[in-house]
Image (spheres, rainbow, N blue to C red):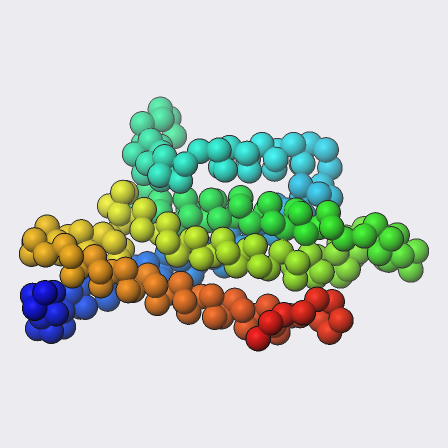
Length: 230
């Protein structure tokens, strides 16, 4: 028990190495959340308001991404693509992990956006068109703002999952927080304190993300359209 609480080991070995992994984790999560969120909104809009062939393509892409485990997707991006003849696609660890996270979170967020878009009453769309707004103006100015508010809790939950499954990046040799923890354990043979410290890092990130998302929900809430608890 005293070894687990050894402050010298924690301060000199564990925290510095986990901080390096934390920097890589944030470099994966933040761009993936932002780009994946935009991709999810765009894909959700296409799946609801696109032409028939656009809807079929978007639905098929989302079905494939949601149907294949993220672990397998990462392995295909990093190990599988170089084996395809004539393509000559070789991704470095970081781009491979980032692309995998963007595609995965974008596909899942498109489901939340699609459901939110379908929940908007058709009367609002007809009213906007009666006022002379084009189809695109109606979607961008009337439908999407309401849908984003309704989809935000689900999309925020997906960001929480993104923080946690960023730990899979080490499978493609992108050494983030979990990867640094594994490296340190292999060198020190002290898994208990290292993995407990890594767990605390993930808990802190998830708690911060949850707090920020709750603040965003309250900021975007409209008076009289549902109650957001403080």
